[in-house]
Image (cartoon, rainbow, N blue to C red; front, side):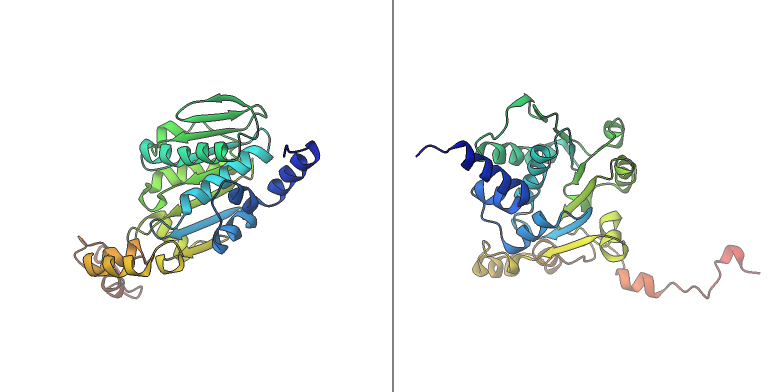
Length: 256
């Protein structure tokens, strides 16, 4: 039966008010944490999630929802490499097509999607000189954030100063280092979401047990349990280094 104009408008309104319904309409039934993240609209979000937990498709739906229902918005997808950014961008394109191409496009390429409403979704590599020309960003997504250089993170934050845009950083952990670890452990004003593999219904317990037996413990803890652990090539444990430092002892250069 053909959809009436009234039904189409009602559906569009439902998607606008509830991004989780938009994700479901794409054929991706959201897990509770995905629905929470989509509906929260938090200005700053850190997502620490296991491999294959569904963080990329969730983020793609956040980006598409922003483009559709904030006309004229600028959405940047940033990753350590252009290839990784393109993979996330492809999920945005997939979501757009699964949704039935709800609005005409002004332009589309392998790196860019622009709606007739003036919204732009742009895929960028994680190199500081290539991103400095952008301003007025409404949504800044940093994918594989644990592997993004601190210098790049510090250079893109000012893009949100005037627009008051959202910042979404997602990753599996990669050691006790870098801005992502610092923000997760000590940063302020962040919505924090942590999804280890056992909390994801699509990852069988039998597979996780096989991975636990096959992988080194530090790899398994990082990739599947979302733990910030020491790196394998680290000579000293982080807690040993911190335990050797005392604020009561002057550095030799200042000692008399």
